[in-house]
Image 1 (cartoon, rainbow, N blue to C red):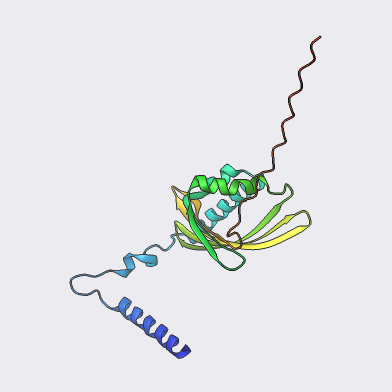
Image 2 (image 1 turned 90 degrees about the vertical axis):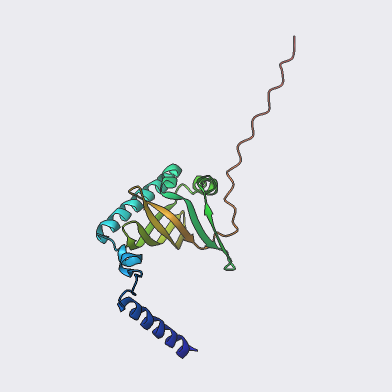
Length: 195
């Protein structure tokens, strides 16, 4: 089986190399250098990474303040979100802005006040307007210390980087936390007796 797989990979790679090296067929054909990743190499990868680092700094500042509006501004809707549950069952779908806010708001409102998160991002620049990122993070709240990893796709829209795709394990099937119950209103006072 391994030999067959290796042979298939070698033959496919060889065929691709021949197709790339072969002149365009008579009567026209696709010039592969004008489409796909060959046509969209980043002009300045270092500058793109700096822009994305600035995007993350702004996002981390908004997260620290619990600024839901700023967090929402960092998303290009609809956003595609992917997760799984404890059995490995995948849950994935596109979310519009209203659904995203309805889902995320209770999490931000119920975040422990002493929660702090540190991030270590790895950025893969695909073009001047597409980048894949992974984030190893550590969250501390009180005596609890949690580590995790997430990943996503950033897109540059009207000169601004935004999330287009987010993936993080373990959230499937979970309902957002409920907001704390409002204190019950005091019962109206009984009318004063008539004299």
